[in-house]
Image (cartoon, rainbow, N blue to C red; front, side, top):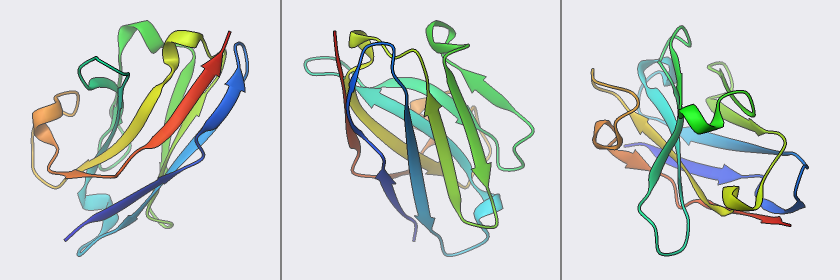
Length: 125
């Protein structure tokens, strides 16, 4: 079983930065899991933000976020991070961490079978 707990959300002004963390409790080695971040704004579908492969060697970003968001992982700490810079009002959403222990497309929401409860990010304009 995998449990994911996000933290680091909050209220920030446009142009500011936030750093999210996702701590994983896993039944096997954390490095066995691809990790992703998704977000869901009110009234919208949950959308892909960024993902990192289990080794950290492959990273995919949503095109619109490339250059502002950075994902990283520390397999020794069972944690994945999302650094968000130059935040915009449209980045306001609940951000979810996800994990997958199977082979597949890491940018695909259906690839993930474990999800955290999410952390709210609000960007004021």
